[in-house]
Length: 614
Ligand SMILES: Nc1ncnc2c1ncn2[C@@H]1O[C@H](COP(=O)(O)OP(=O)(O)OP(=O)(O)O)[C@@H](O)[C@H]1O
Image (cartoon, rainbow, N blue to C red; front, top):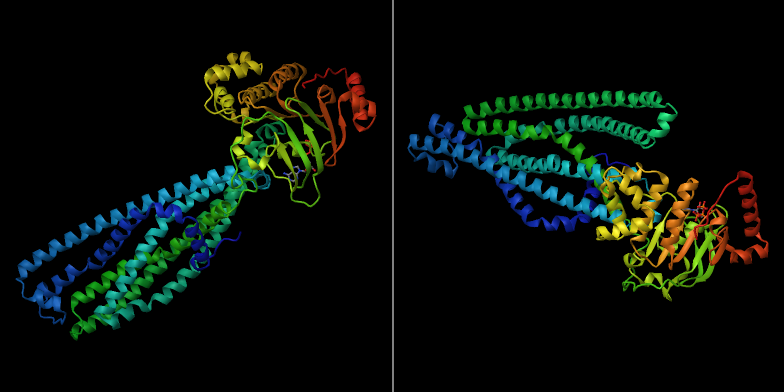
């Protein structure tokens, strides 16, 4: 998505963001209203600030100057000393009120913006967790993390430090121009004549600044990618001694980023100086013409004072306009990235009227099920089978045949394009997703554990499980003994993805996590692949206990591990090519029998000892 180049280009984006965040904004309505009122009062105070000084000049120091304004007529009748004291008090009061209202509006708006953005972030995170696998398998996790963290933070920061001050300053500038025209249109025209020149230079400079900032942003992205990649694959980096090469790569980006940052700084400092000169020119012109008008008594010295003060005050925020608009344009890009994500609709979600699934017996039926991912080429084609409660089914066949896809349909990670899947006689889609998935346990080849305690990792299988249940599950999974030997036993905190454990230990904790669910349906996707004989034996034993009495789907390339299954499906190119028990398939002498014999020969030649798990 291209980044908006300017506020104008960003406007539709801002509209879209505000529309999307409307519910969160509405929640902060009261606070926003109070802050806005404070903001308007602050603007009024800013406009009033030079007026006591004007009256001191016109009424106390130089009372000979005439002014037709009714307010001034009233002041003319007040004792000069009383007036002076009153005006000095007013000066302090105005400054105090301005400070108080500015504090109220700044803090109020900042709190409201922070609450809105925090709400949006929570929403985004929960939305992301619910998006279908079809979305997540295409999305880059690094990019998603950036959106939840960096983009949301940038939105908050810019809302507080740029958008709100910009809005308040604009309000002040408009008010000042109005008052200047009220006082004297000729001087007001001279004062704002510098405007186009100011706009021209600031637009030109800010465009340059944005270009440099964009390059720098890209560079930072590249640096983050290099760092993330090498940290994620630190084992390979160290084993291949790639550190120096990667350091050089990183350092090049780092140096360039530094130069670009300096250039952006130089440009914005240049812009500030240009604006200062323009303000000086404008002030000089107003002073020159204003003094002539004062001498002709067309305006009072106090009016001239108000003009010059306004010029000084008004141009100060304008100087930051370029900075603010650039930041807002960038934040809009961030906001749109967030809205893009929030607009994603999960492919798989609860259908209207979906009900909580009752306790399953575990009878499963696939009826003319066909499924394809993005491509039209079907991954599963016309799959039909029935499994009785408690039966063990083995899915075997060549890689890419569609075995994992088939079981992912059972979990409703995806919905089939044709046909239907029934559990205990009811279509899966009739049930609420959570209640369906709660009754299915899975153990994958590379089980993912979380960077928390062993106890919590097991309890994640059934949130709210007691310590006793956790230990019982660990015992079933042959994990209890090795867990007790860990430094803090069940309270040992694991490394990210369970990196501090061996493959076999990880699998046994994953089995404990599956066991604690006490689900009637179990899916095992190559759970013993990659383990050494000792670990495999221990894991297989645990799996035997886990799957007892459960409807089980076991995916395995090792046919020795699947030969005891009640039904074996030989799946190739998305169809069940052969089905039956081990004996039936061996007798049929088809692809299964050939593969089995090949594996048996291999096993004999390598002296391997494979163990059945189902
Ligand atoms: N998320 C996905 N998006 C697109 N295509 C996919 C996706 N996942 C799998 N595929 C494709 O679907 C086909 C079946 O994949 P699947 O993982 O189900 O096969 P498998 O039999 O389990 O293979 P293996 O035994 O190697 O695990 C493959 O051609 C694969 O490339």
